[in-house]
Image 1: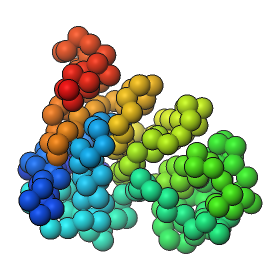
Image 2: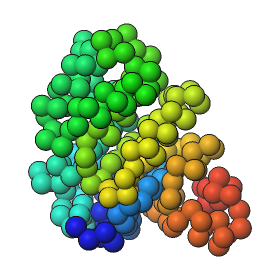
Image 3: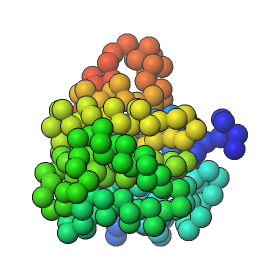
Image 4: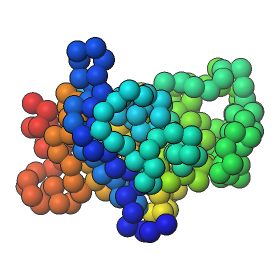
Length: 234
């Protein structure tokens, strides 16, 4: 694949629930080799956008392309998705979750999953139901990044974890980012997570209000990203 290829392209993307617009004319581009923060308050449309990208929602207007292909069976093999809710079977051990992912995804690297769970201080013999929310998030991150995907889509992975766990998760993401793929991470938390991103897109009320690289936006607006976010959302 071309190194400058856009891993994700959305044009005039619109999704309605009845009369309410969840997304209204969204244009979003994520080039290969970038980590984009999708920033916005709760209810801004971030989760709807991610579900469209990973083919969990249909009936929309506009276009979505993952590596040049519309969302569907083929793109599911290219995208590793971490939803904003718990999805692991509570009765399984971490080791059994690793085995399940190894069976389900041809690009899953079991040795990588064991390596990351070890780095995050997890005991693979523990069952999911015995873990705290932060520990479950560590498991989910490990399983997601053990895949060799073109696009990683993470919905609020840092929302409900303590600062120590957040820093460890950010470390795992950065350590396992190889530049051949891209990462899209939604969050309503800005403070402390800016170093994770190369680019941001600020979304509010179903529209992209601003998009660009961190460095260009800082130079152009002359203020920290957190202040810029607050100004736009306000």
